[in-house]
Image (cartoon, rainbow, N blue to C red; front, side, top):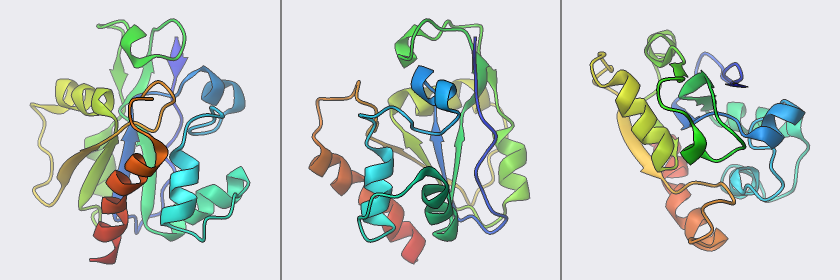
Length: 167
């Protein structure tokens, strides 16, 4: 059983980045995107900061100071290993994303870190009311399992987060 983390967010968050559920390395270290080859943090350090490599607390501050909230679609699920494809259907317990959106009224976009996160969201929230103000956007996964796209291509795709924050 994989258990997720609490959201990282301030009350004035403007965008929400949703993953599926933390992988083994993240759970072991109790940190979002902790796998050494996951490029989420290097992307955020370039897009939101000056490109400097930061320690985990500073990374959290960087995203929150920028108006970004982090969470996962699932609170828990059964799976073997870290691959999203190993999540056992029917074992999934979603987070209260709708409640989160209502308590964070400035969020205008949800960015999904990969296709699985977006498909899980649609599976669990398709019949629930998503506030009209919220746009759903799938981005390429930052996971090392998504090696078909190089770092520069992922960086270009993820620039949309900064564009929304500048609006």
